[in-house]
Amino acid sequence: MKVLINEVFRFSRAMHWIGGGVLVFMMLLTVADVVLRYLKMPILGVYELVSFSGATVIALALPLATLQKAHVCVDILFEFYPSARKKVLDVSTRCMGIFFFLILSWNLISMGTSFYRMGECTLTLQLPLYPIAYILGLSCAAECVVLGVDLIKTMSDEP
Image 1 (cartoon, rainbow, N blue to C red):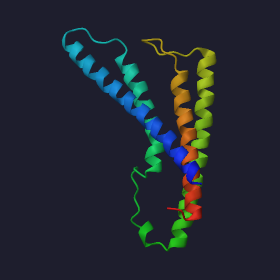
Image 2 (image 1 turned 30 degrees about the vertical axis):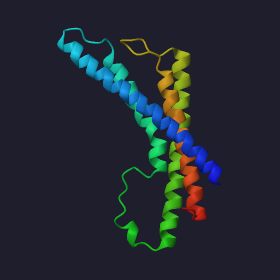
Image 3 (image 1 turned 60 degrees about the vertical axis):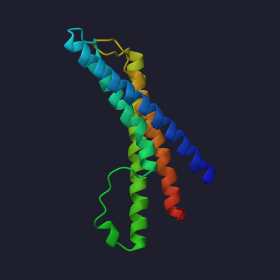
């Protein structure tokens, strides 16, 4: 079990670092566009690139954030429940999350395939749309794996 958890953590951390690199690219691109816009030479297609980058950053950061429980959690009433009820709620929310992200992953990958077959591109730079749909779909699949590992840990009472 520890090997699986470590591999999922390593993969999620790699996705997180790639997302960080995309975030740096997005920041530098925005700064360059603002400076060049001031000089009356804006960069063509910045809106498309920043939009793609933003979606990619969020998608690639999600699995590690889930593993580290870095997301917002409102558990005011949850703390007063007995431990058996907490475990049932933990298991049920993990199962619902797996189901949701599995459907989302399937649909995003199907959408990417459709974009690829139809040759869908952005308007300004003519960038293909399918890589972003595939990245989002694969990130959702990774989120399913992370939630599955978390589910196993919850059911086996591992820390």
